Image (tube, rainbow, N blue to C red; front, top):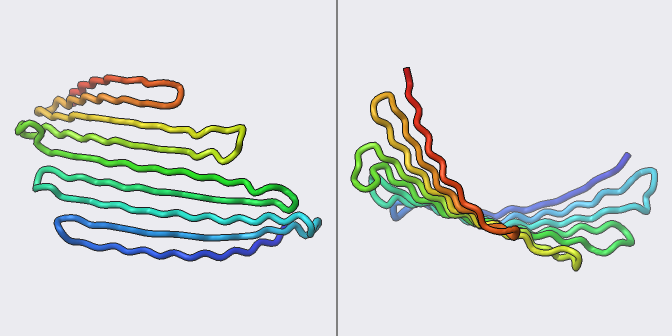
Length: 169
């Protein structure tokens, strides 16, 4: 059995123009929880998120999209120190529907970044970077796909190359 209460607020803006759209937002909330069987055990929490994104048409065949998020949170149980959490994510994507001037050759590329921020002394930040490139081509009943991906994490860097051919009957 517990009782909870919370409050929050959000503020955002979005707009269209210049062949694209933009979004900006901030969200903040807080809460507390108390146990009915033990009124002395109380937990408080507060979280904030900042967000931004942009979709941009370059021409009728290509476009870009980007977004970023920052998050921060803090929780505290009565009599214990505050535990903080934080993270950041961002990615940018590009898409072209006629790569290298070849009809029906679709290309997409996405670069992503993620960071988990460690506030505790016994922890460390964790970072991940991913770059993914993909080509898709359809010729009649044959579907060809080539995917090239690079991933960099704290443990090292790895790459992968995948080719797929699918024939429909």
